[in-house]
Image 1: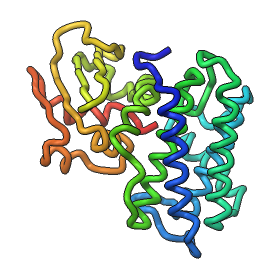
Image 2: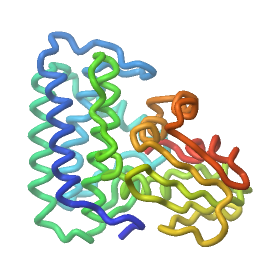
Image 3: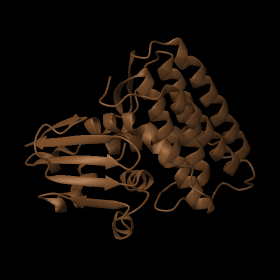
Length: 267
């Protein structure tokens, strides 16, 4: 179990809602060759990736071992590119149907497994409950990219972000950039407005995550959940949310907040 408790029912419901929202954006499209902003992928490639990821989650929940890179950004990107090259399907309605069906299959398998059963995923090891929040975060992340390309509302809410925090906590542990933190000694307290808080402490390369800070906090961060998620996933720069008060900081070393998201690779 991680620092945060998974809301099982909430995460399941949110995953279905996000998947249906993304599928609804895709189905009317006659052409999926629309480029995704700040990405090398088109809408069709992103949708294909989501559909294949849906099947990956089914397999992982069922106990299969599916190697997919070695958790570095470069290796995961190479694995994604290889899978996309193998599957040329880009028809929107078929990809939408595949995404919905695989997600429903995944959510049918999960209750048959112990919640504490550990699963090795492309984002590291996690229990079955956290795997659902991983699926939610992954679908939300790429769904937001598709929505931006199609000029549609982003399929993300503060409630959804609060639900994915158990996975993001695991992601922080597995995707911390050691070359950036090896000499860092600092204590952060991250508060999501209307949601959980996390104490993240660095001691010369060793990171710990707790519900409460183990010592005096150097940098407090108060974050609007949606703004934080979009910045953390590389979907938005941090300067706009800072200017509008959606990301605020204080403490003895408030300037450390500018570095915080950059201490981790996006999972």
